[in-house]
Length: 316
Image 1 (cartoon, rainbow, N blue to C red):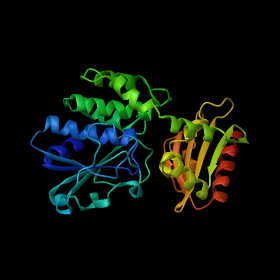
Image 2 (image 1 turned 45 degrees about the horizontal axis):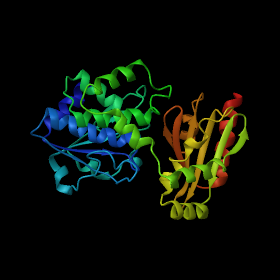
Image 3 (image 1 turned 180 degrees about the vertical axis):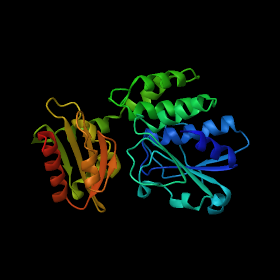
Image 4 (image 1 turned 30 degrees about the vertical axis):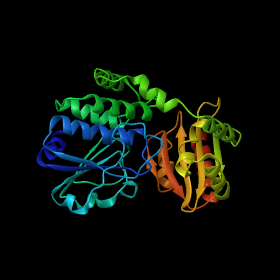
């Protein structure tokens, strides 16, 4: 599965690594980790990472994107990570590259690159890249291992989600053989300031039970503007950051966080037991079987999504 990918990496002296917009720990971990892997094993290559910046994961070493001129792509390989759809790729200049390669662990959505390495059985893109490195006999250094481990931790919910399996733990064990302390990662990921604790408490009070084991939260546009200003956050921090407030409610098997923005309503869908991905796809989104996202035009459409999830729970 990995041979063509390795051949492309070996072939090109200049490599530019992309990932999805609004990066999470897996997107950044895979990007930083792959750059470190390539530099460790092919020290003569020039490797860049590009994309939008994030405050949430600024604790990760090497997180800051490089400034890359257009002409760098002329004889380069562009690698796209952790992205199932073209519109989600941060920095569209990957199309300028001489060759393109993708590693992704989402359910397949569309062809993007010349060579696609896609396996949705992995809990994270970082897990897929770790397997790639192991199968291809590549050496890890501390930065590569720590970055890849961070992505595995974040996308598996610290190994709580059912996407984590024996392979996940085996690969995580290989990474922890390098010189880094996982507690340093956990302290940064799960420590929070008082303001964010207050924000989560506010969102707990916003939870609505729709029936049939479904919960949801709605944040209207004007309210979002006020919350972002008060708590120094943004729409992504609310949409992705607050969806987890519904995850541990007894009797709730699926939940959605709706965030109304100027560009539409951001929908973050999650489930403990059901494959909600087809519902996300129906509304123009995608992702994983139990963690997907979409953007819909208005709150009325969002409520239709809630009804679809309720019907799924009823077996309709």
